Each structure stands twice: as C-alpha cells, then as structure tokens.
Image (cartoon, rainbow, N blue to C red; front, side, top):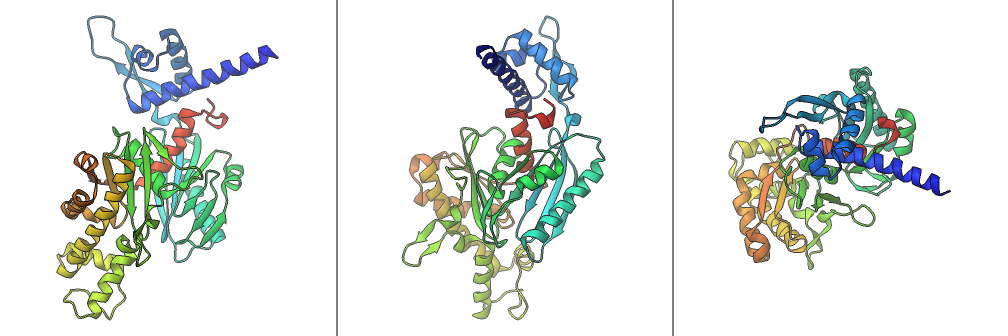
Length: 395
C-alpha cells in the first residue's frame, strides 16, 4: 500500500515539474537548461531529463545558443509553436467569434458568425460548425489540445452558464457534450474574466500581477487578477461589477450609466429634445452610427462620451478603493473608445478614490488583437496544460 502511494506521488511530482518548466518558458522564452534550473529550483540533472522528454514530445525546441559568458555556451529553449493547437470561441450578444492558434498562441485561422437571436441549441450548433471549420483548416497538422469558450453572462466553476441576460440563457451546460464530441478538455468561462487572462498572457498586462480588466459594451463586467491569478470568487461569479449600485435613491446599477444602450438612450433623448447633431432622430439609432459620428467630431456625441466618462470614472474609483490595484485596463466595443477621455476619467478617480491608491493607479486601453476574450480562452486552455498536464496533451 505504501509503495503504491509513493509511486503515485512520484508520478505527480514528475508532471508538476514538467509543467513548471513549460510555465517558466512561457513567461521567459529563450532559457538554457542552467537558467531553468536556477529559476525553478530543480537540479540540473532533473531539468536536463525533463527537457529531453519535452523535446521528444515536441512541446519545446532548441533555438540556438546563449551569448558567451566566458565558458561553454548553453542551448536556448523555447515553447515549440508546433507542439499543438487550441480553439477558442466567444459567444457574445450579436456574434460567435472563433480562432485557432498554435501552442504559443499565434492565431492561425479565425471566423465569425453573426447572431440575430440566440436560442441555445441553434447557437451551439453554429458554434460547433465553427469548430468544425477550424479543425478542417488544421487538417490534423497540429494536435488539438483543448477548446476554450468565453460566454457573456454568469458562468459557474463547472462551466454552466447560470444566467445570460443578453443571450436569454439560464442554466445552460454543454461542456460534457463537447468533451465527448471532440475528445479534448473544454474550458468555459465568463468572457470578461477570460479577457483579463488574455491581457495577462498576451496583452498590455504581461508584467502585471495585480489589475482589473473592465469590459464596457452592451453590459459592463470585470476580470480581476490578484497575485497573477484570476480571482473567480466562491461560485465563479466575481467581477459582475455592472450590478454595483451607484445611486440608492434611483436604484441605478453602474452599467445603466456607462454601457452601449445607456449611450444610445442618452443620445436619443438629446435628439428628441432638438439637440444639433449629424445623427437623425427619425432613423434607427445604432452603435455603428454613433461611432462614426464620434469619429467625425459630432459635438453632441462627444458631450455624451464626456458624461459617460464621468460615470465610468466614479465606478472605477469605487473599485480601486475596494481592491487597491495599480492598473485598470478598459476594453470592449465602447471601452476602447475612451482613449481621448482618460483625463476626464482620471479627474473622477482623483476626486473619489483614496489618495494612496489613486496616486499609483494607471489606466490603459486594451489593444489586444484579434480579441482579448478569445486570447484569454486560448490562455486558459494552455494554462490547464502547463499547470496540470492531462492525458489528452500526451504529457
């Protein structure tokens, strides 16, 4: 009985050590065996044996020699792009977006299906059609390691979409169905939480261990990263900041002041009250038309963005007071438009945030392509492999 227990522990330690090497190479590419030993705390012989094993399995490869320091130059190692592939999907309010990447997250293929409405089964069938196209493109060239899916709405730890107001979903689960269908692990999470992962792995927060990603679109949500790890909360619902109440008398949630519908409603009211604008109150107002008017310098739309920026800054100040993070990243369809209005957002933060927190705070706009959520879903797939190697990855 004791022997079996020791054997199991040895096997687990072997897997964890391999994961440690892969994780180290993801964060710091082009390391030698000696540098890996120094960073991971493993002996050089252990590192050398594991590296040989991972090279044999095609997960890492040698990329040349390190600069000379007077002695023998070591061979540098990196993750091997051809070590496998991953598929990511973003199921949003108006579209399903899908990408295929290699082992280091380089996009190889992408496609988008629009959604006019989102009943569960037809939507999942469209998603499966996209997965099929991605697999068809890959043509078994790279081994599929996993599938990541970001969904707008509240997603539990088990991948169940507990509630999605924008999709009209309640208690929807499809993880087991897809794992059986595609024979790989499937990770399902909230789209904004995945976007935070994407920023931490591939975006503007590569070297940040504490930050909040705020997505401003048709709703408002946040992905919270503390000590380099995504904070999900007890039930997996952490980050639903759009529900923060900003005015007790009016019972107004934060997202009711700063999302796309709020902007459209505000502009519609201004037009009906006779405000001067290039937009026409008689035609159907949509976000694309508003964006074009904003880019053309429409003063009424600019004024609306200024007002929205003030509301956004107040909410960010509240979050900074609670979480004490040094970085906020703004993303989403509306969130990416706030670059010119950062001074206004900063003014509200300076007014309402605790001095010690606001002085160290930086606010950035997301520039991650093709999409922060998609790259975060890829990151989750690879993270599951790097931290907890599974049989599907043949580790």
